[in-house]
Length: 148
Image 1 (cartoon, one colour):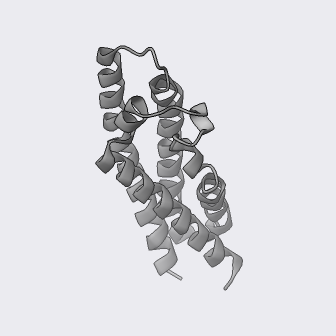
Image 2 (cartoon, one colour; image 1 turned 90 degrees about the vertical axis):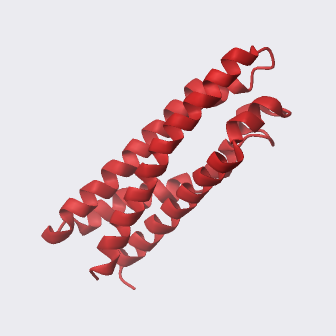
């Protein structure tokens, strides 16, 4: 397998992990669980979902970026590669926003219930956009991979 195909396979794997992990979090109301459950260890502690994404993040983002760079010489792949890269960047930006402005605050034991509910609702709205971005990036990477 050549380097381009290996990078695309790694990017697709990382994107699938990201997509299905975030879909799981949506279905089980992970931010609500974080807010209601034990908060031992903070953002990187045992109860935090953030720690499950850290190992795969380099795979997802670096492999996608490398796939865009490596595949750029194929003119017919450029629009799809740009879409994959842009959607991955959008999803990463949403993730950063959610971690900084929502998840960190949900670890506060003194958080009023009204604020908790507002933050959980914000997380779900943003996560649905992130799911669309991850799905779009995965479809774009799949389309490039099918072209050979």
